[in-house]
Amino acid sequence: MTTGPNAAACTYLARRLDELRSEFESGQRQLALLDQRRQQLSETLLRIGGAIQVMEESMAALGGDVSAAEVAAAAGAVSAHNGSGG
Image 1 (spheres, helix red, strand yellow):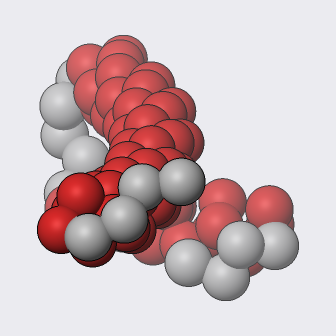
Image 2: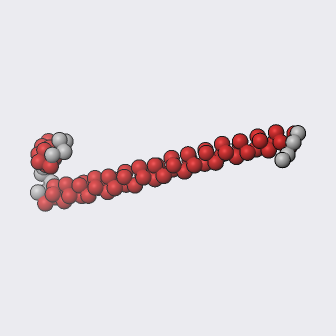
Image 3: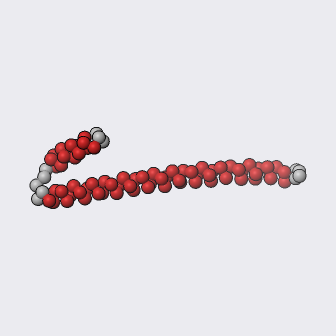
């Protein structure tokens, strides 16, 4: 067993090592959560992008003569039909 100043230094270093390990684990957990959130956002953006494409193709098929109000009304009807409420 170590005594004197070395014992105090070892105790301090051991305590600090535990703190650093704890901070490291916490950082890893936070990074995993951020990665999960990023994946969810990427999937959401992909779905929105697909919806935009469908809307643009629908408008082009109708000759582009659809007003913004008509598009909004149609989108509201689809949302209501899907149960998403808007």
